[in-house]
Image (cartoon, one colour):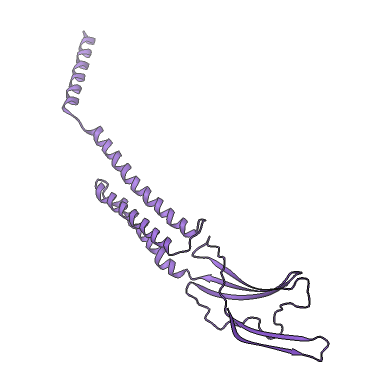
Length: 231
């Protein structure tokens, strides 16, 4: 959006006439971010000012040389999610366009994510892990504790995904959450397997009256065979 304030000056009496134009503008533009390493990512945001010249090399956008600065930024370098690490400028000229490119280097604030998201997910996993140390005969306590952690973790992951940018590719934070979900799920499966093995052992050790009668018949038959062998 162009603001009303503008000025121009024209100088004569030199070998090459020089025209200076000044205009104040406020614009909104989008930056394409790569979030593979979220939340430990660093981003670059390019602002491109382009002017069409079409084979006219007498007009070009140039950087300020000497002690001057092409870009003067007076705001805070600490933003809500990022910190500004630096700014770079460059100019390009071809047969079609002259361009002035401003590159802003950004670094995401990861401390909050570590203190909340990563720490909370680790605590939920640790609670599920210590259920392995509960009495192995107390299946209900071990199973309910690990299943509750799995459900809470899945709900927490779903809520977290609503607050971050949507992407079609896998992010580092997705790998973190999915590893813990699979790990807690394996703990639940392990509790069930332990209970099945214990029940199988109980069946093998249980002696019924019929088994005792069969054992007595076998012993008596062995004694008869031994007695007949002596005769």
